[in-house]
Length: 254
Image (tube, rainbow, N blue to C red; front, side):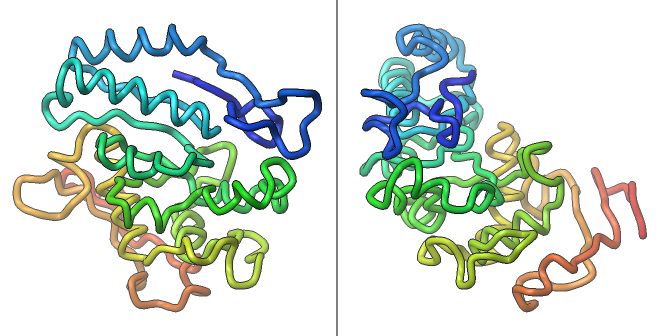
């Protein structure tokens, strides 16, 4: 489901008006009436189905978490390890990161979005809300599950760019800003890899068969030409794939 738009166009649904409001009460809006969204989520939960919702603004995130919380209280946790998921979740209300973790909702995020519009968050949402935007370090510290991706075609389909931005908070093309945007929210490469593999498997409802290398899991493995856990940050984007295995069968070899 799509619950709102994007903050750069003032279509993300936010609790307080945009800093550069275009009219009185400019808070964006939900694309689906909240009562209707609630009914969708409750109906899905009643059948044990997970729901994925595009929610960028803090009001959209908060409302979606309210509905997931009500559904969990009514029907219990989803069966078979299934997880509800919020897509993008770019700016939070205080307290909602902890709720995301407590409700076991996967946060599917795309690190290159951080630097896609330099100065945009400050322009649209103001300095007070900026620290709660793309807070990957805080999300992990609160126990939330991150799932990484590229959001193609919005950004390039290049996994190394995703990893680079996640650990540096810098743009994959310009490498700006120096030191990273909100550098306190940087995460380690090990955490970034976990988000890309195990987290994405959780978002897809397949964490019991994908995302880790261990007995009983599908042998989907990518072989890289360097150890990205130990290489210099500037070398992350130079990484090349040597081979790809799906179900233990080699499907690509350089």
